[in-house]
Image (tube, rainbow over all chains, first blue to last red; front, top):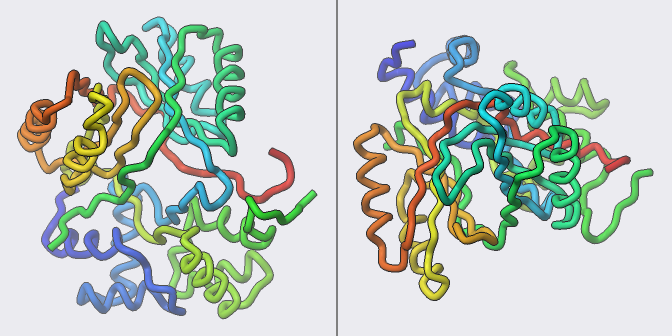
Length: 157
Length: 162
């Protein structure tokens, strides 16, 4: 999908925070200089094209009770990547599941982000995933400190 | 069983509301009225709950979640091995890039992990090159996605069983 200047302007507005008023799309449309109807149509187009994953909400999970998170690296035989990737994706505790490159000092080709209420809960989740996928070589990297967490500003300013 | 305790400040009604809007925020002229219909609340009640959840810092943002690669951007995950004594300085230098969206200390030999979004491959390589030269950075491993199996931060907040 070709992105015209108008699209970039609309995207720059949509990636911000929708105002908490009765007609938030009308407010955003006004800022972008189009009608509410046009904006809703653009949103539908972006979703159909896969540019927009969803209109949704980003939560601060640690405040919503999900105080612990960890990345888990899995060393999966190449011929099982497809099967194991799909299996891990079905775990509700896993928010992100990716295949990524390996290095001699980083042999883990599938990476999952796990969330839970405690570190012990994360360890239990990883064990369950390990048993379920029959993958015993994994490493759990608990989060110690969050230095930055933000959303990308596309086409800003 | 739905209990409210200190570590868990959300009411069952809040959890239901957050569950609903995490995944799919209505794309209609009056989205809060639509949410109210689904939850048995009126529009004003939904708005007032959301304003409070935002003021409390539980909601970071309601809006569009875009696929960076479809917008022509490139992104990657980067693992750094950093000398413990300068970890904070390196973390601050990494965080100062606009394209760094997440930056975490993790308990591992690779102790600093960040995600980077850039406008081009060239930009991305330039930033990685700069980061790899920061004093105290012993190793940098670039881990761009080969394949995406799942991206979706959908948590069941509705309470009850865990």
